[in-house]
Length: 185
Length: 185
View 1 (cartoon, helix red, strand yellow):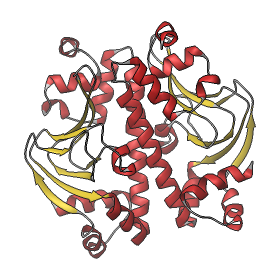
View 2 (cartoon, rainbow over the protein chains, first blue to last red; view 1 turned 90 degrees about the vertical axis):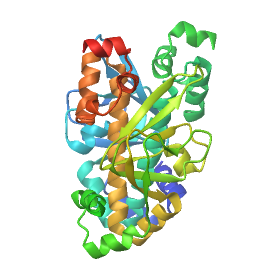
View 3 (cartoon, rainbow over the protein chains, first blue to last red; view 1 turned 60 degrees about the vertical axis):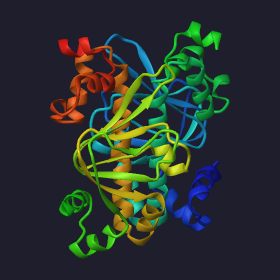
View 4 (cartoon, chains in turn red, brown; view 1 turned 45 degrees about the horizontal axis):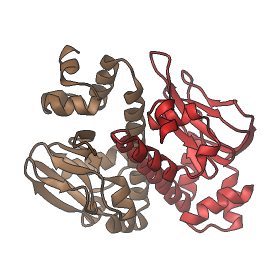
């Protein structure tokens, strides 16, 4: 398990076992159960999360009571409510487990300390943030596609094999189609 | 003019005039005319742009020939097609001037060199990337709001006073409403 975060970092910047052991102390490693909340709208998102195993998703409940899936995070992915976590503001997103999950959690303060402590980790987190930017910008572009099939294909490219692990309702919410349309794709 | 990028950096991390002069050499400073393209869909986005003056926007033309505004960038803002710029892939976005603009442009290679050269700039660009994440995540959340007035208010909070500088058509496209609905807000 521990190898996974180190492996993820190593894909971006080489760190030794000793360096990983040092930086791991900045994280909290926790197990969550299916349906458990990592963060909730209306409270402050205290942590950024790296998913070691399992599947979580971030969603927003709109003023008509409809849930919108903003992002999924499966193994080797980061997730949080960026505005809340980085600005210390109230979260707009619920972050919830779709499966039992093993997760590394890091507070804003510890992430800043870690980046100040290690140039490699500053570089790693800059690259992670860019990856997240790419995903979010693609997510916005996707929502403008009139063609549902293209939207779905882009979704599957970003989240390989996720369709086997997520309900049709959540898939349809992320892609922005009705369940009936999703069935036809 | 030069003070503006230095001023922007200084809000995040203190740099001296000497440090700024050194790092400025990594950028290209260019003037663009209203309606000029900075980057175009179908080509690679070679630069990330910091807007010193003027106003630019990124848009996507969907498969039905409809333009969708993805992002605006006014003074003191960064903009690019993240996927294309960072991955060297073909861009999905057009980036175009709505007003004459003075812009600092940086290639991917120069940005990486600058970050390797200066820990302060690595920190600055990590923070800029996080700011962009916050804006994009809010943009996605906004699109789920059933209430048009809330969408518009969130837009104006992110882009103060922009409504005086942008056509109703582009405003409506960003917020995701018809021009008629926008008129009623």
